[in-house]
Image (tube, rainbow, N blue to C red):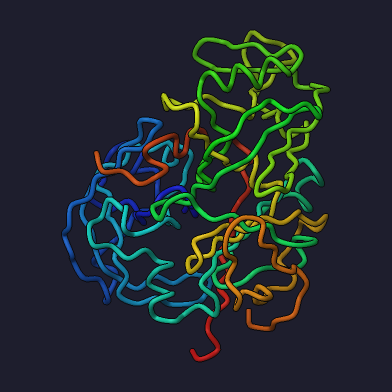
Length: 374
């Protein structure tokens, strides 16, 4: 399942889903569960890439990294023509906010755990492996940590930025530069672990690619660029701090038929008509360590470390007892704590959720830092 900060609903394919795509997936069997309860609230999700999910809801126990969350509502998809299903992914765990979920009156998995005090801290942190940095062993994988952080996967301080509203993990960014040259761009961006690329409005995409030698726009494909592009790094300025996307990460290793030595650009075009709405997907997120604070409604970004292979030191986020307030409020990143291991769419669905999932996308592993009182 995709752990998705850009949407709120959790759903899996039901046995009632018998489309050709569904038949290739693992499907939820209600008769095999002694704790299943029918809820039968209708839900209908239309994602920005044209995907469509619909069905009814159910209640059951969810086991995540060895921790059971009882009586959790989720969707049973009877219709699933999603992009992720075609890539062999069974469903979505929405890490957004229940208030904007397509399932009415829904408490997300994270909100349920926070309400029940299952989590030591009301946060989720995400680390994505960078495959091209170290090959299969060092760069593959990643983790979603519920209630804590892995202190070996980031260095220095967290930069905190508040979300712009209470409905999505959308933040404001101050500037964007490429090759050391400011593009004079600022605005709001949805931080979306469920989207592979960096998604920008059409006019903005043109501005970006004007600064990349050899970049061209191809019908039905979008922007492509030389696979060996020598353009400088891309930098996002967020809450006064720069976060770097290395030049090699602007190249998606996806060859374009008829265009020798060209690859897909990691900067893709949004269907949004606004010049202010962006999506920072995996092409950005794998170059930071990100923390989502459900209490303070803020996202923290830290520079990633050079340790890519396994989870090493899962613990509490230091100083979270003093919630970040406002932009630029930094939290020390050193280890001080201890612990144990439809039409009404959500935020990402309004734009480009799951725009494209390319082969090589980091595999995500869930880990929970549970309350010591359990």
